[in-house]
Image 1: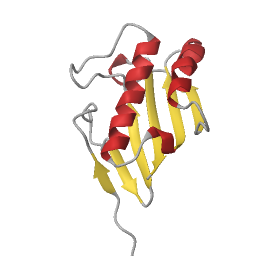
Image 2: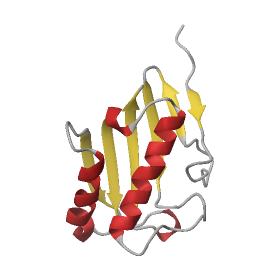
Image 3: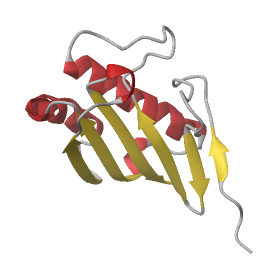
Length: 128
């Protein structure tokens, strides 16, 4: 019988704002819930620009991956949710810094709204 999925949590990323886990390990994969650009130290959105907020989303993903014993360099799929697709090029500039070689598969979609009025949210699937 396979091992049951197990939750991953860290105080180095924002706490879940609802009935979900920051991440779940299932088999050899870590599924990381969508991360808003919340700075866990302040509980507020990071920075004044979409670049600042993209960095914060990715930092939050990194911390959850680290808590599971892996890293974003082992990401296999990323999904970026944007409230405004006009930010796509600016988000890509930051995103490329985190995935300079062999970037994971990715989707980027514009959504009508995100929790807490955020303009970006990013989720990930990472290999352990």
